[in-house]
Image (tube, rainbow, N blue to C red):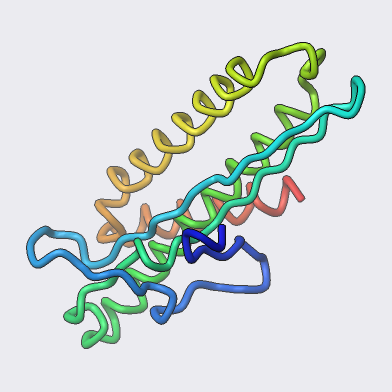
Amino acid sequence: MAGDAAFAWSAGRRLVWGDFQGSPPAEGPEGAKTTYALYTAWKCRGDAFEFRVVAGFQTARSWVKPAVLRDTVQSRTILAHEQVHFDLAEVHARLMRRYFAGLAGACRQSDTQLSAIVQRLEEETSAEQRRYDAETNHGLLAERQAEWGVQTRRRLAASQ
């Protein structure tokens, strides 16, 4: 994560605009972009499978346009939208942890097989992130944005 200038998701730490250190594109409708990664590692000790995943926010690849920062309402709204993106990444990290905790015979699988499982789970994460943006129109539909925020917080609380 350090090589990506990333920090781990934490319940006690909300995103702030200072975390968005990348350069925004000159064109395009988005006011900000959250870039995250699910950092995974695994190993076997005998038949004991150890799996680790961390949702990391990539500061250098995340950005905000100056116009967003100048508008208090837009700034607050878009930052809340970006926070839910990062929260969804953590939801999926927890789902991945749970999946691998229940995977029978994981140490009998090859790294290629385990990597394929991780890739499939990451694709599910990306699909939900795209659905979130579509259903909230990138945070512009206030009612849907609020619903996603509540739903995501509930999923986090239920999966601790």
